[in-house]
Image (cartoon, rainbow, N blue to C red):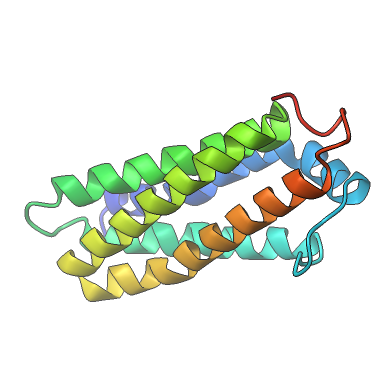
Length: 159
């Protein structure tokens, strides 16, 4: 396998690790100090789920790398990945919880478009993104639920 393909496949995990490092302390504190909605998983779940999702994103990206006319799929992929990283910064680093909720809907839409475009190029690549799509919907629920449950706590949100 070519080096470029390996780098493309590793990029989401590396980027997610960097953003996770920037926000991990805030994420842990938030989970311990604020009310969580029903169905919120244990905080340890996120450290298991995200590396798997980032790995699956990278593999899906590697699968479509050599397909023809993949510019729209790659643009959708880059957009969703940028929105993914941005959400963590908005929510955990800057505590713009309402803004992060709105952004999460844009992220979900971008992941949906990416999933469809990847599936059209290589069905296996699109199917690899389905767990991520589902998780993004769940993450929007968690974002909205915590925003609602903690709306009266001034320390919870900066927006």
